Every structure is written in C-alpha cells, then in structure tokens.
Length: 177
Length: 460
Image (tube, rainbow over all chains, first blue to last red; front, side):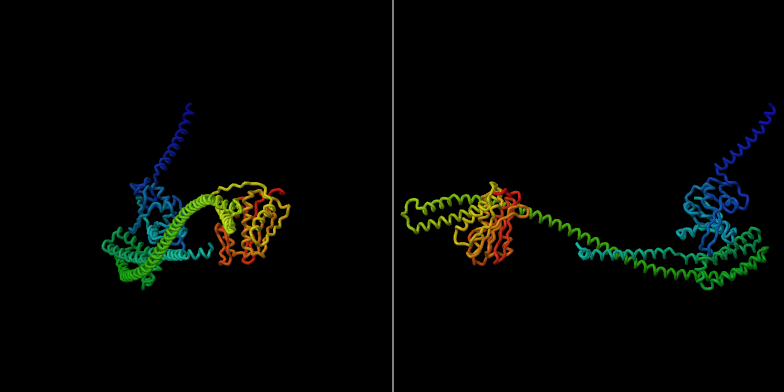
C-alpha cells in the first residue's frame, strides 16, 4: 500500500510539474508575453500594442528579432551602390509579435529623424527591418542597427518618394498609433 | 450606300474624330510627362543630403567642444555617437543617387574625399579620448565647415536654377496640354454639334415624310371620292341621256322606214337617215361610258358561257366591215381552236373595239389580221394586227387609259371619245386576262388578248 502510495506520489508530482509547465507556456503564448531581452536592446516598440516585456514597451535585442524569422531581400537602393543582400526580420512579424492594433507606425531613428508609415505597408509588402547587409551586421556607422528595407527590385512600383521616406535607417523605436 | 458614299457623307465626322484622337493622345502623353517631372525630386534629395552633412558636422563639433569643457563619460559616449552619425552621413553622401546628384556641384568630390581622410585620422585619435585629442579633432574638422557650407549654397543655387528650368518646362508642357485639351474640347463639341444637327435633320426628314404620306393619303382618298362621284355622275347622265336618245333613234327609224306611207320628201328621208346614224353612234358612246362607269363602280358581273372564237370574230368582222369601204379583215383561226368561258357580250365588245380601231387607223389598201392560238400556259390568245399608221411608244403606253386619244397633227380625223381600248382592256382584265399592245409609227399596231388557262374551254 505504502509502496504504491510512494510510487504514486512522485509520478503525480511529475505530472503536476508537466501540467504546470504546459499551463505556463500556454498562458505565456496566449497573453503573448515576450521574453525579456538578454542582449543589448536595439529596438523599442511601444504605443498601441498588447504584448510587452517592459513597462509600456516591447524591447528587442538582436537575437529576439532573429528568432522571429530571418528574411533576405536582394535589392538596389538609392543610398548604396550595386545590388545588396539585406537580411532582417519581416516588419509584420514584429507587429504580430507585439500585438499591434493601430493604423500606422512612427519609425524613429537614432538621429531623431522620424517617419510615419501606414501599417498596411507592412501587411502588403515584404518590408524588413534589416540587421545585416551583405553578411555584415549593420552598425551605427552604416545605417544600423536596423534599416527599414523594401524589396524595391522585385516591385518597381515601390520606388516612390514616400517609400524612400519610410526607409528609415538607424531605426531605434517604433510607436504604433 | 457604297463605301465611297459613306466616306463622303461622314468625311467631316471622320475629320473631327481624327482631330479629337490626336488631341487626346498628345494631351495624355504630355500630361504623363508633366506627372513624371513633378514626381522627380532628385535635386531636392541632394540638397537635403548635403544639408544633413553640414548638420552632422556641426553636431560633431558641438559635442567635441562640450567634451573639451566637460570630459565626462556621457559626453564621450555622445561624441562617439555623433562621430558614428557623421560617418553614416559621409557614407550616404558618397554613394548611390546622392553622389550622382551632388557630384555636379563644384569641389564636391574633393571635399568629400578630404573629409573622409580627416575622419579616418579622427578615428585614430579617439582611443583614448582626452580633452587634448578632442581639441585636435575639433581643429581637424572645423575647417570643413566652410566647404560644406559652400556646397550647400551651390546646391541651393542649383536647386533654384533647376526649379526655374522645371517651371519653365512645366509651363510649356501645361500650355501644350491646355492646347490639346482645347482641341479635344472643340472637336468634342463639333462632334456633338454634328450629331445634333444630323439628328435634327433626320427628325425633320422623318416629319416631312410623315406629312407627305398624310397628304398623299388624303389626296388618294379625295381622288377616289372624286372618281367615284364622276363615275356615278357619268352613269346617271348616260342613263338619263339614253332615254330621250331611244325616242330620237326610234322615231328616226320610223321615219326612214316610211311607216306612214311613201308621201315623204326624199330629202327628209336623207335627214332621218343622218339622225338615225348619229343617234346610233351617240348611243354606242353612251353605252361605252356606262360600261366604264359600271366597271369603275365594280358593278359589272360576268354572264359566263362558252364562246366560240371563230364565230365571235366573224360576227364582229361582219359588223365592222359592213360599215364602209375599209381595209380587209383577214381571219386566220383554225376550227379546232378551243373556246373561251366568258361573257360573250364583253368579249365581243372588246373584239369590236379592237377591230374598229384597226379599221379606223388602217388605210383602205392596208391589211388587218386576226389570229388565235394557245399560249405556253394553255390560255387562249387572240391577236388583232394591222398595217396602219401605228403610234409612238409613249402613245402605246397611254392609249389604254380612258379618254386618251393619239394626237396626230390633225392629218387624220378620228371619231370616238378614246374609250375603246381602255374598255377592251378592262373587260379582258375582268376575265383575269391581259391586253398588250405593240406599235411602231408607220409599221402598224398589234393588240394581243390573252385569257387565263382556266378559261380555256373544251373544243367548241
């Protein structure tokens, strides 16, 4: 009897741990809670968002952004020479991750330049927040840490002055409005 | 309507359409050019980039000075950040479209390359950053303020010049577009006007036609009423004329037959004969008119029986030939010629009229022939030909109309009122047959009666 009970208890506590962990993960996913950043924060997202990992904002380090999936765009730009291979995360993936619910997003650069981009731009086009260019990570000296890039070469219609103004470099903050 | 006619009628319209199309095409094409020109902002981008370059340089100089005054780690960080921004801006200035635009400005390449050298030198001085190295950096970068500013000024001038150029070109383009628009408008209006007028014309034509038709209808009704009144009048008058005429004829006959004995002057007998003869002639005319009126009133009915043609023709010949010394009438009708089912009085009357016409217009030494046979459909054909004076084709066509008489410059005296042929024609048509007349001046006349096959009787 006792043996049985003894055996039953550890099995039961294992089950409890598993159930608890499943519950924890499930609530985590359901609430969309973002894990806290471990490395240096390169992007802050605030405004009309439902998933945050700090007080009022969602902070991302480079690894967190990479974890959302890396997308590659090969394109020419007005500010570079030749075709460039950009790697980054799809802007709409970031919007989904933070549970954005606005109409536009204000993109702010380190140098205080800012541009208000309609959210449908991210939905309709494969816009990325590029973190690497030709395999080299972007730094402050070459438009890093993040640069908003359109697949201009894939769709010539994107070569418009307003899209050029949306292509914010040295991006540090997105405010969903 | 042939294509040439269509083309001629629609030439104006085609011309308007061509002008419209050309105007619209050029207008749209130029409009597109305007749009493209308005969309090009390259020069403005260049000035923006250069002004940003100047701004970043001022930033670096400011934070350097601040660090020299307060060499704190925060100010050092700020210096490093602004230096990075400066590098970033230099990168922008030396690549892509900005370089393509900015390189038109004098001393651009030189300034940028010298500035790059200076920044590289700065990079060697920043580790570690001290107020002394900061002072050296400041001294190194400060001289670039002036060239950057000059670059900005010349860029601004270029922008102004280009804007003026652009405005001139735009104005020219807008003028062309406006001209095209005017052409399109005018040709559009012309086309509308043309269509409107065409429409009006068609409408008034239609109205005129409707009016004409209405008038025609009324005229026909009036003519029919008048004709009917005439027929009624003729019938009544003839009937009224016939009654006294019968007594004139009767008493003339009584007188010439000396019914009350021979005690009468020979002269009076001669007068009575003239009265009898003239009255008979008048009676014949009145009878003709009565027949015509009855036909027109649709009041004649056929008293059908089988008619022996040879017999009928011979009877008529006897009557006509008995009159005076006239051309001989030759009858060439085979005994086995079938008979006709018809009204004997009307057929005989027709034949009499034809024969009397023939004798009337054929001189004594001429020839009149009556032949008969079957046509290809089996209908009885009866032809009266003469070798008389004949008539023109105009007369030949009209002579079958009532009261028509051939005018022959008075060389021949003809009696009658011009009803004979017309009546004969109508009598035959009452039988479902046809009367046709062929004639040539000086060659004689040939009149052919053809009865329908249904009226062909078995051997009479």
